[in-house]
Image 1 (cartoon, one colour):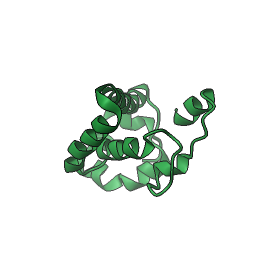
Image 2: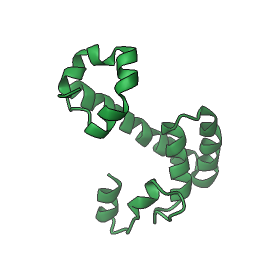
Image 3: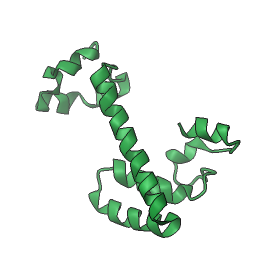
Length: 117
C-alpha cells in the first residue's frame, strides 16, 4: 500500500526502511510513524505510550488518529484473510508450529485453508 500510494503521489520511498530503522524512508515523519507501527505490532506494550506521544507531538491529534486507524485496518485485513481462507505463508507456518500445536490452532476450522501444516 505504501509503494502504491507513493507512486500515485510521485513520491520516492525506501521500503527497506520498514525493516531497518537506520534508513530514511523518504516519508514525511517516517521515523516517528515506523516507531509507532513497531510499537503497535511489537511485543513490548510499554513502547506504545511513548510512540503515541511522539506521534501526537510530531503530527498532531489528527495524524495520531489517522495512523491508528491505518494500523487497525491492517489488523482487520489479517482477520479478513483468515476468514476468507487465504493460506498461511510457508515462512509463518514453519515458525508457528510449536504454539499452533500447544494452543490447538491447527484444530480451528480455518486451519484447513493452509495445506501441509
